[in-house]
Each structure stands twice: as C-alpha cells, then as structure tokens.
Length: 160
Image (tube, rainbow, N blue to C red; front, side, top):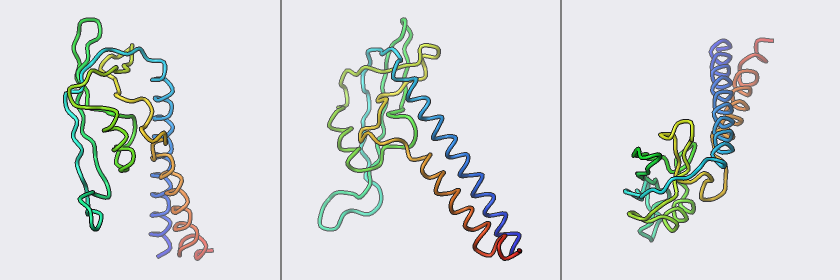
C-alpha cells in the first residue's frame, strides 16, 4: 500500500501545481484585459440555468450557471464569443444574480477584446462578486491533500 499512496500523492501534487499555474495565468490575463480596448457589441443570449437540488421551501436552486453569447465588431470584422468572465464558470447564486441584474438579453454592451487577437474577448474583466477565479485555491488544497496522502496516510512515513 506504500507505493500506491505515494503515487496518488504525487498525482495530486502535480494536479495542484497545474491548477495553481492555471490560476496564475488567469490572473495575468485579467491584468492584461484591464487595458484592452472595447468594442460596441450586443448581448444576443443570456440564460440562467438552475443546477442541483432546489432550496427547501422555495423555487430557487442552490447553484446556477450562466450561458451567454455576444456579438461585436472590430475594424469592420464581426466576432461572436460566449465567455462571460475569465476562469471558471459563474455559479454562485449571488454572482449570478448580480450578473443577470447588470446584463439583459438584447442590450448593447462594451466588449473588451485583445487588440493582438480580436477573437479573444470577455464580457466582464472582473468577476461579478469581485472574487478571483477558484483554480489557484483548489490547486493549493490539492497540494496539501497530496502531501497528506503521499507522506502521511500510509505513504512515505510508513515506509520510513
């Protein structure tokens, strides 16, 4: 049982490092997007989709998901994108409510786009709740658990 625990711990460690890297890359992209130019666009689709069980005694779900699509034009060329924010989906109910309050289907929107690659755009540079994307934090947790499994829980410490 020593070797499998060490291998699982190493796999978790590797996954955690990858998630931390991904979180850092998302943060870097957000920093760059703060200085991107904007194009006039139209929000062509906004869906709020309930997920999982409903809150007891209400018609609300515990979690929601947003699906968007927006069109915009840069230098006479038309583009369509479906990315509301950088990183993970907007799923927390408070963030979804804030997003849906700010945007309505059919509304004119300002779309930040990458001047070096106008296909690369986002509807909101900052997340609606102001929190960062969760990849980095999940990476930290995965590293901690990987160390616990690989070193502690029947892994390397048992071997020594």
